[in-house]
Image (tube, rainbow, N blue to C red; front, top):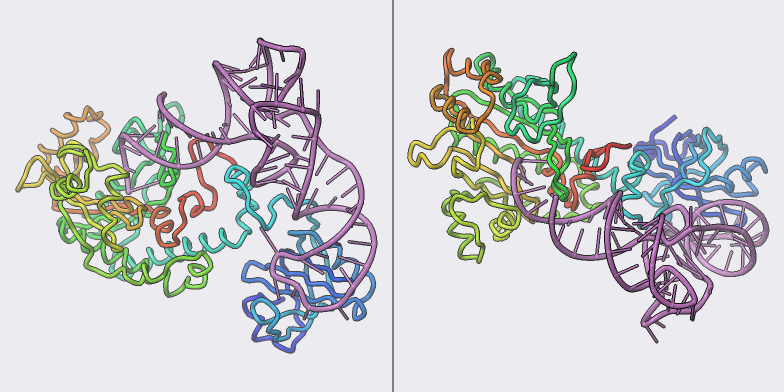
Length: 428
RNA sequence: UCCGGCGUAGCUCAGCUGGUAGAGCAGACGGCUGUUAACCGUCGGGUCGCAGGUUCGAGUCCUGCCGCCGGAGCCA
């Protein structure tokens, strides 16, 4: 059996292809069966007078998504999509498919999500998920090339995280356990062992958000580096995002073109990315007519206002302490703020990275935990990292689905994860 | 939780100031030797989201509920 992507190399040979019927067009005494095998599409031509009656009947009775093994000669044919076609000799139906629900036409979102297990087979979904897989591989390659050690962090955790109100809880042999919102606190523990580490896996947020940028389960890559400050942190973010875009352009160009992505906007993504401080951002927003004042968090509409002037991602750094997480390091030049950054994707895709230098002073960290009313006992081991050889360190989290939504130009993050978990959706 | 929008055939939708249900696609059958979401013909297919109310009469108007979508808050 051969794969459709290799058909050109088998021109003139008789081969077998296994796949699923994408489309059937019958014209009396000739029929066209388009088969998808997961690597591509091939048009099979069935001519009545060349086939046994049984084969002709089977071919013209095929329905959408029937699985088949087709055998025939590979021919170069300019009229065929892809330039090659199969002159059908033999056909074996492997599994029938009566009344396949998804048609080659527009469908509503709810219907498609109800049929996500089948929707995966369609071309746009295949293209988007292929880009996701490439970006995931690129993430591992990027960190591996730079000497980072991958440190897998737990998904089941005690009550530790950023915001207790948005944790999913479950029973753990009589104790409360929570699904991890972040692996960050754990990768911090990995730094003294390996200096530069990262984790990459699913994270869970029980936020009741119903927007195109939110999932309750999403994938995040979180590097953490010892002896790196906020400035070095932003430089690595810039390099990573640039690399991910380059890899997608290099290895997923057909997919991006199929999705109608404006590639010139991606090709323009080169460092350095523009940077403004939170305070400058507030001033700029005021000039653009926003009501947001110093001390407020920057919302979605404001992010779009800030990023509209450039096709490059934009860093906004050093936010007020009170709108950011407890573990971020106080800015020595302005103690009202912390050494952190958000990276806003262009074209309204919003925040794709949140990063910071971490508070390495035990007393300051303890004070922040108490200020926020967090359960001090749960952070005992985390505080140990400041008791035993504390060190300056920084890291960030990049949201995979938001990043891939931006790179592919898809509107909603739910299409860039195979089985999205949304506010009201746990199936399929 | 709040604000806005939408629920009619398997799917996508039309259905006017209330008068008793329609199209395309999908399915079944027939026709056609080069189609590209082929085309042409025939047929089957409905608790108009649910429950009340107004009315001689409700898919259409009113109330409540349910579901979905987008946004806010929160975040990646």
